[in-house]
Image (cartoon, rainbow, N blue to C red):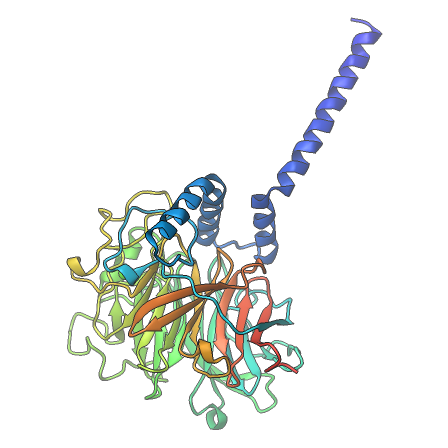
Length: 465
Ligand SMILES: [Ca+2]
């Protein structure tokens, strides 16, 4: 125990220190951690619990089940069937009710595309609407700001004054935005947001008038609250869209937790519903449960989980929605009045814990519910969506585009006779959580991301100057 031992000890300590440094370096360079880091950077401090759970599950599968994936791929080609756009293995044992209900064949856009970042640094641009040619009203979820983004020069206005107080914890905040069909005269802007009221939070709809100088929303008032309130900050739904009669469809969520999520099945609660209201927030007179004493008059359809995207099919006029599933089981549904879409009784997904939901029944129709037109297994983490109701990129006409949060891509869905016949994943290399999608009047596909970016996608050589 002399001088020699001391120097050996020092040497050992240094060795440990160096090894520890090396270990940190290795960890940081693994793909998993890099992805997670960039997600954290682009996300605000209030990480969306559910989405991040889903993301890490997905990522671990990615690394551990690569061999399984390649087996599956070769199986498919041996069968002579066209390969699915989905290359990851399923996370459930469920089988589709009909062959085209999941894992559609991969399609590829033939046109050469220009992908341009119009602006960045926006926070979480949750909702957007083209209120004037090539000018968007854009919400920022967490800061509850509404701004104008000019797609031609990329400029972003100061926050518009007069927006509502929101609860911006977790998935809450200022959500969707749209304008009245008569906006040019009425200047009316509609927004959805998570609102604190007695007993908890609700998804609320409000409206106000955009001042002529576009700096303020005047006389903002709340016109609808999707009661009951709940002490939680997840699954607000929150998309709004006007129909041809000038009424609004609002989508809600079932507030996520067990057992509140069971209220998606109850007709005396606005949770987990598609809701149909007038611009004043009153139930539309033709609504399916208006004669039912025990049901809320605003309900249009029920049994939904967390509806994050909504649009009308340009040809059929049908209302399509995308709802965020649990682990797998995200659904595309065609909404008809009075229908029950089954959540949380049936699902093509499983709990995040891996447990079965209810008794693990996936078939909807056999249980008296409406089958989804399509579902994803594993998840596509679907958010905002828009049909391509334009012919600027002719091969995209009437296709559906959906933002994917995790994995990070835009989903293109090709539909024939209400059947999904093809799927493509776009902008897979950008590493962005795609939040909302819109198609401009001149046919550009616009996508916002949680990283605060707004992308414009056009056919190369056209659309952008
Ligand atoms: Ca369902």
